[in-house]
Image (tube, rainbow, N blue to C red; front, side, top):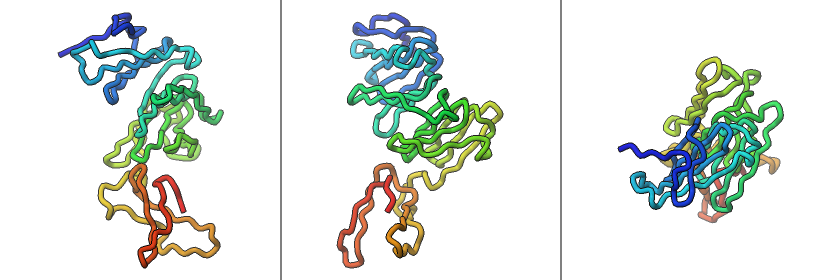
Length: 239
């Protein structure tokens, strides 16, 4: 059955602010609706589309986004909401209700057209000047452009992460690109996780060991051969 939500419908004293909706996604009982010049709305429907009595809308005015176009929204594995706009990316924390603008390197921003979250909770931002990667903590990690990669074009329309294969699909202004990330794809079985380099030899005290294909927020416990615990690491750390 179709259920419609229209501009200025009374939804428990709240409402959507426009019928012109160039972008929307649904995640965890919430529909995020982006507008050209009216900001962003979050429609909480509580998984009961045919019952509007428990619904409400949170409005994020366009002034929160420098009056830019809201082009993309993605919710990561910690429930942080990442918002791509013509004026740059933003991060919204539903727990604290805090909305923060994220600064990109000047040669890569500010326009963000698409955001994808991979299996390790990295954020892949498709911009008008290439791909920007933020790590699980939301910090700048690296970037891909036509200058440093075989990316088909720097203008990115859409980024989609396939968590089953670890592939990243990128729709550009000059064709489709695929970036294969097998080491970033979390393993299904423990046998698929491995450490490198192997053997790992400590000589100077500055060497690091990496663990490939750990699930997001996995914990690694390191023991001696006699069973003594040496250290516990989170999946985002190196040692």
